[in-house]
Every structure is written in C-alpha cells, then in structure tokens.
Length: 332
Image (tube, rainbow, N blue to C red; front, side, top):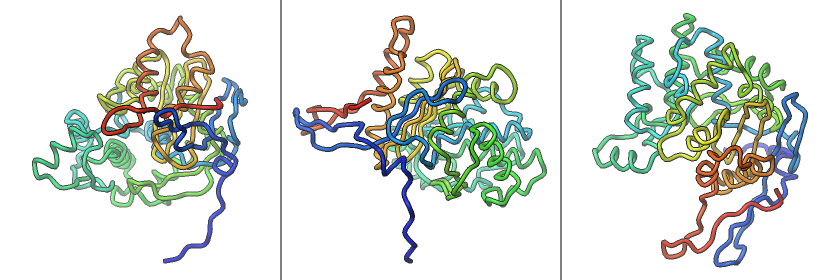
C-alpha cells in the first residue's frame, strides 16, 4: 500500500551532528540530533538544532498520559503509579504489579490491548522464551500504562473495550492534559508501538512539560513525580539507564522513549529534551548526558550523579566482542 510523502520536522531536517561512533580512533558513523533546555519560566535556555520542530515523544509522553489518568480519578500511587508511567523491563515484580492494577479494577490480563511481546530485559526475555511462553500483552513494556488506562476507564464508567480509540473519552482527556502541561496543542496523531494514540508536539513543549512536572509540590503533578522518584525501578528496570538517572540525581524525573527520545525535568523547573534524528538509541543517552553536564549537573555538590552519568554514557563499540571504541557526544 503506497502512502503520500510526509514532510519531515525541522527537529530532524535541521539537526546538526551530535554524536560520533568511534572505532579504533576512526569516526565510523555520525548521528544528527536536536536538544533543548528550557528555563523554569518555559523560555529556551539552550538549543541545539531547531527544538521548535514537532516530534513524536513516544514513551516519553507516559508521565503526561498518567497525569491525565490521575486527574480523572486513577487512585493508584507509589510503585503502581510509577509503573503507569513506565516502559518496564518485564521483570517479575513489574508483571506482578500490572496484575495488581488490573485486579484492583476488577479486570484481568485478557482486557489488555497492548501489543503482545516478550519482556524487554534480556535475562527476563531469555527466561520467558526458555519456559515456552509466547509473546503476551502483560510482558510487553507498556502493560503498566495500558492496565492503568483500563483502571481509569472503570473509575469513570467509560467503555474499556475501546480505550485505544482516539475519540474515546480517555484519549480526549490525555490530549487535553498534554496541551495543558506542555503549553502546546498536540498536532499529528499516530499509533504508538503498543497500539495507543501518540501525539506530536514541539521538542520545546516536551521539555517544558517535564520541567513543570519536576517542579510540582502538590496536586496530581506532584503525585506523578513522587511516584517516579520513589520507585524508579518500576519506571524502567534494574539495569536501565533511566532508573539509574532518576535514582542518582536528587529531584530529577525522566522518561526515555522509542526512536531515540529522552526527556528530563529538574526540581528547579528546568526541562531537557533530546531527539536523535535517525532514531538510534545508541546515541540518545550519550547526548543527554552531555547536555546535562553542560548545564552543570556534574557539579561537585551533586556527587550522586557520577553513577547516573556512567550509565548514560556507557555506549561501547565492540570488535570481536571487546570494546574498541565508543559513541561520544560532539558539539554539545
């Protein structure tokens, strides 16, 4: 089936080189990308490329989606609310928590409509496949969000069978919340990898939204940030860089997204967002770390950032199974 050509966002077409893939001292490949830092008042503090261009935030939108659910009666909190914001690794404690959300709403795994898959975590995926289990919705990394969407439908008396429809009251509430928290009206609507709607917004809007979330001290926004900060292992997993980042930097909230998106909010209200133009995840966290260092998060008074940055910057280039180079940020 042919489709008409689509125009690319300036966040992609005007993106400068932000990372080198270095093998044995030779630059083998480059990655283009866009990054932005917004001040507490929402103004742009730092721009690399054109951050006013729209992007699909993918799973970086999940804290906004969860905020809409909380605003509309979702009663979960703590680890279960962090899981609602997650792209979890599919470890046993993640799946147990998904079941807990569903059971609390009088539902079961059969009500989930996210795309069946194996667990994201390599060890969990290997164990799953070795056990002979097929791909299942509960194992897919978005099942915490989908379980929470269903629970929100139950609270409001909305039809749970059609919760992925862009016209569904839940999805309308999410769209309204994204516009409110980011200050930008969502543009194009697409289907995310898990089957739920995803909305295009400027990279600056993504950054501003995360800054607002991170600075919240009360209300539904603060419930989201408290949950993420207290239970970062439910946001990602035991080996994930997003978990290390949230755990390692006091007052920070973050969410990684597919196609190389990363968003961060700082307790002082600043926001950070990164998009790698070719969608390669190997450059995403490296560039994010460079931006965070540039705005001072490696300062001695925040020693906890050391381990968090090590996780972000770990991007070895292998030769014969051994490190022979790395992905490094440039021009940041």
